[in-house]
Amino acid sequence: MRHLRSGAASLVQIVALRWRRAQLRMVEAGFAVALGFVALVAAVALAVAAALRLVAGIEHGITRATGEAWIGKIGAGVLTLALLVATVRLAHGRARRGVLARVADARVPRNRK
Image (tube, rainbow, N blue to C red; front, side):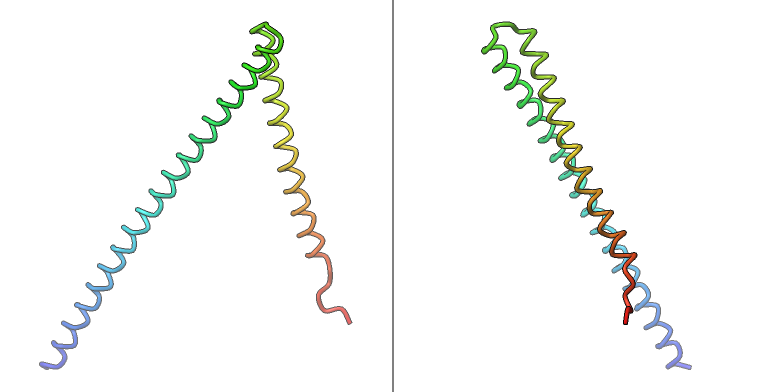
């Protein structure tokens, strides 16, 4: 009977230790997610700041070249929109080629003799 109690106590200790280990892993995963979120927010903030600086630079350059502030604003807007459209078209083209390549690979029979 003494051995049975000792075995049960050991089992309880093992279960408690594994539960603590699982809790620690959950806390570590939470910190990793939080760190990833902070990095993502920082990257988005940097991208927005860079885009604003780009637009301001384009606007300033066009204004200096033409001498009219309203032309600089319109020109900066048009050029920024053109850059955005070009970026989206490039990304769409790459994604489309990737999908078409995967579809073509899926249609090729593997065991052809």
